[in-house]
Each structure stands twice: as structure tokens, then as C-alpha cells.
Image: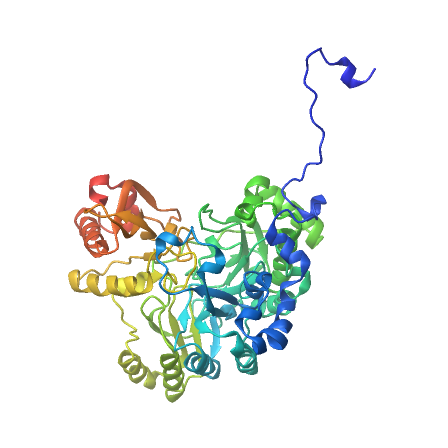
Length: 564
């Protein structure tokens, strides 16, 4: 007797159909389940460069195929920027073609933040000649240009690649820039130098068609610094310097970190990896993500969702059994960093006796002329190496002791101080509505204004504080893990008008007691009232904190009245 014949009368028959699952290739779901996946199947994003160089650069913006314009060009670091004059209230209403300007943002990937003065000078020259002077330092160590014309891309690539720089897979569903410690190889307290691993990963993965169609972006971090200076907790994969009690210096492996609208902190796999095997493990995790990552919904296509569903044990097991074909060594967790500041700002002695100087642009905003002057200054004082950081800051390395003071004075003359206030040191901002098609509010100029206001109002405030300003919910500026995180949105002012403003997150942190910020019900501030609010909550912190208590600790226990 069949199973169906055994069922009681009236039992509904289950409709039999093919379950499409989450679009995992490893489960046999190779048919694209959304437009983005179809675009990638139609043509590999790496192929678009040929069309840019042979067709679009000659025929202009109007000749660009729509799937290339809003998809594949990202594989070469290009996004259309926001058309001027479109207010934040229309961001989610207009069609993409209505938001598109005929100019591009171009991202130059700087793996590990590693730059020579020659490279920095070329970046500055391109900015001046092709990008109307723009050259923002991002919180992933890259440089972003704006106002780029498609006609100029062949020449821009020629100049960048002539000095060893690249825009390959700076954006798109790819392995993006590998962030690294800006003091790798020179810091006196370094556990291990991760630079060889970054270089090995670049050779294996970047531009490799085997890994150029991932479910979504994939972010990597490597640092052997005890300061934990690459925000490893919010990367898809991170390698953190540790000392194994029997095997010596190596790396602890973390996976599944990421922010945006569904924030997750990375989790340890519990594995210790020697330097020479970091690239193997990285490639294995990228391959696992490619094959098992969710491709049905873009909102669930990051590796953090797979890790959440599988758990750490299964993730590690699949990685070992199917990709590494060997067991990894169990290892220790990293120690907590010795202090709250992890940005290397100031003057510091290197292990070779020379010095490095970390200095602070305002919210990452610099220009091509300034970058060229930084290169000139560094060379004039004996250095040929500079670094970018994940905090939108910069370093000059290898400075002889007798040149330190003169170089610091030269930086001060460019408004690039090595002794910034807590506010200048700790404030970051994303691109914002000036150029970003997703943004709702202005961020860069608002952040610079806020720094100036708080320095004037609270001149003696010296505690570590992070203020991260984001133009939309996507958290490119890491709002959930800031002391004061500001998520841009439209709010109602005292006159009942819709104006630019922010939802406030309080007490987020990384490193010491990592966690996401607290949201107080109804706590929103207008953009113009932001300085008043920040002053008020920081004065409450100063008045109510216990000795040695950090802002994040105070915010977790403070009353709603103190926070509003």
C-alpha cells in the first residue's frame, strides 16, 4: 500500500515542487535567483575592463550598457556617483538612472595600507588632473576619487599600474582590499609581521576568476599588532597575531564579522595558523563562501548569515574537510589590547631606532595637492614609505630621530596634526549625500563642523572617544561600534519640518568589551542640533563616570535621562 493510501481521509496532499533553497552552488542551485546573479552569470565582471578601454572610453557615458554601469564596473572600482541636487528624501524613491550622475567614484585598493611616496604622489597627481582634487582616505585604507570621467579611465589605470597600484576588485562581489596593520614590520611590540601573507593572498586571489563571482563582497583583515588595529571583529575573515604556547607566533582565525543593517561580530574558529599557511586558509574560506554562501537574497548573502546558521564547529569542519584537506591546529585567543586608541597617532619609535609619525586628517578628507605635499615632506625628511589606516588616518614611516620635530611641524602647516584632540582623532564619516546614491544626509562637512564645535566647547576633554557619522543605515562608517554612532535619516524638527538628522547609537566598542551601541527609544537629533547633543552627553559622561571608566562602560549603565 502506498504512503498516500495510508493517510486519513481529508489529509491535504503536500504540493510537490523543487525547493530552490538559498541559491547555494554546493547544493546544486546554479540557476540565478535574482537579477544580480543573472548579471554575473551573463558575463564575469573582470571582463568589463576591455569594454571600458575599447568602447566606453571612446564613445562616452551614454554608450555604457546598463548591466555594466550598475554592476560589472564595480569589479574595477567604479560606481556612478550621486547626481547633484537630489535631496535625501528621494534616495529610496527614484530609479537608479535618475540618481546616476555621468561621473564616477573610483576606489584605489591599497592592501595593507602600504604605499611608497612615489605611489602617493601619483595618487595625488591623478586627483588633481582627473578628480577635481578629491581623494578621500576610507576606513578600509583605500583612496576614493570622485568626478571621474569614463573617458579618462585608460590613462588613470596606466598611471596607477605604472607604480604598482590597482583598482582590481576594489568593489563588487569579490575579495576586496585586505586591510593590515599600518606598522607591520616596524613596530617594536609586534607579535608577527603579516605582510608576507597579504602579498601571498594578493597573488592567489585578487583578479582570479575562480573567486571573482562571490555571493557578495568579502572583507579580509590581517594584523600581528597587539593593539588589534584592523577592526578584525567586523571582517568576513580576520587573522590576529597570537603566540601559541608550543609553536610560537602565528595567527588566530576569525570569521563572520560585518555591520550594515544586521550587525554581527566575528567569531573565533579556535584555530592557530602559521604565517606560511594564512593564504591557504584565506583561499579556503573564500572558496567555501563562493560555494555555500547564500545567493537567493542579497540581504542574506554575506558569510555572517551562513556562519550563524551553521555554527562555528560545522564551518570549521567543512573548511578542513573540503577545502584545506587537513586539520588546523587549535590555538589561543588574542590578548586584550593595552589601551583604547588603536590608530597609531603620534610619534613612535620603530624597532630599528627610527620613528613613525601618525597624523589625523579631518574625517579622512584630503585632496590631491595635500597628498603630493605629504610625499614631498616625507622624502625631505628621509622617508619613502607612508601608510593609511582603518581609522581614516595616515602614517609616515622610517623617520630619523633628528628629523622628527621638523616633519611634525611640516605636517602641522598642512593642518595634519600628530597631536589631535580626542574629537579630531576619534571622528570618522562616510561619503554621505555629497556623492553617495544611498545616502540620506550630509556627513563629511557635518563631521568637520562637529569636530570644530566640540574642540571649542570642550577644549579640555581628553578621554578616548569615537564619533562615527553615517549617511544611511548601511554603516560604512561603523556606527554600531562607536561610542557615539550617528545613523543618517530624516527627522522632524521643532517646527514640524522634515530635516536632516541622525538616530543615535551609544556605547558601541571594539577591542575592549566589544559590543554594539545602545539605542534609546526616540533618541534622534537634527543635524544642526548635533553639537548641542554631543556636548550634553559628553558633559554627562564627565560628571557621572567612575575613575577609569570608558564611555562605552558608562553608556551601558547610564539612565535614559543622562543619555538624552
